[in-house]
Image (tube, rainbow, N blue to C red; front, top):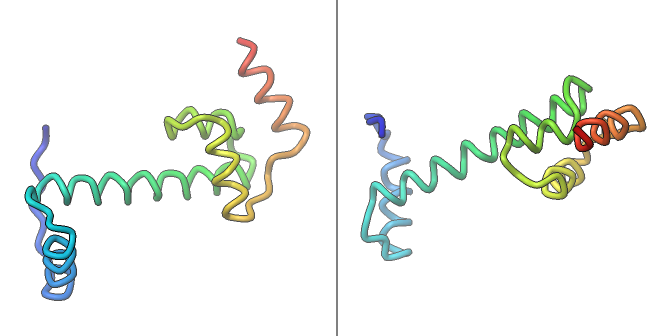
Length: 99
């Protein structure tokens, strides 16, 4: 496991301490790792949705990279009102699924 040192400005530290106190968090490091994991996952989904919209990859491939089921990736695309899943994408996804 790698180690990352981060400097927090006063406002960020205030928010973090507020959440830790209100949520009665005991292990600060575990909580921060969870926040970081959630944020990175969301950023990855956002980037992959953009790639699908720009037709740089299929939905199936984006789901595979994100480590989520195809249905979840389709939900994320719909949530973002992202188009990009057309007949060609469906064909690519079906070919990929049948390999």
